[in-house]
Image 1 (tube, protein in one colour):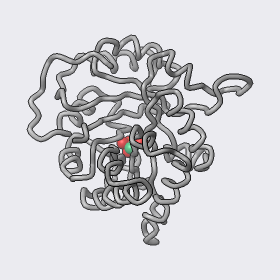
Image 2: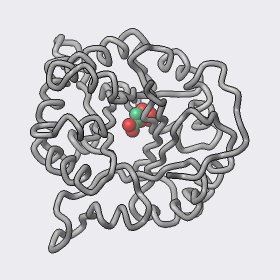
Image 3: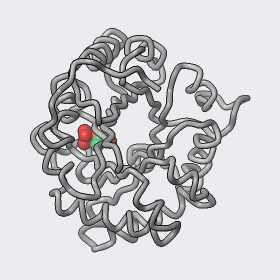
Image 4: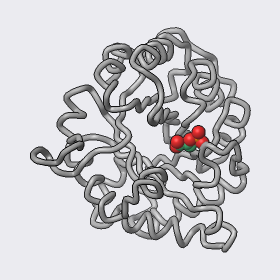
Length: 263
Ligand code: PEP
């Protein structure tokens, strides 16, 4: 059984007081026990958000990391620094880093290995551009990103990795993949995990969907057999919309008021 994970990518949004208020609101919210919740604020506010969500089930992640452990790497942040402020997860290969900053798979692969070596959980994003989908190349693109980003990663380590399928044309655009479109790629990704590793690995790895997930489309997406949660941008910036997605991620969830401590 794969536990659902709902992850919020706050990107370069919010100021300190808004980030702290959002984290506190989520920490106090009633959400189902069986859903894992993750928020990924700007690095600048990791410490403050960590303190605000402390003692709750809300886990903390970063939006990126560098692969070297310390030294003369101006502007970068190491895995040790992220662990030090309470992070358990790191988003890697987000489409904005791939397509805006220009990160290649080789660099994402180094970051992913460093993340795993530090005992943090990578949330590896893959996904095609609109023109690639229209050219029928979705799985070619996603397979190349999968193979490049996970090159040399062991079965044990890939089982600790979360994959997020995020069609680039659906990110921040209000256009969501239909549940069938998303399920098709998720099933193909699971097949790829079985081919490159084995069936047990394919059955273990959580594959999230990302791309304009909102409270009103979350339940249909999450009801697909190979969709194990969501990576959420815009709708993760408000307590109501993010908790709406969390609550919609399990069928007829009975909200419970006692949040578990972060492990
Ligand atoms: C994202 O940033 O990963 C994302 C899916 O954004 P949005 O939900 O706003 O489309």
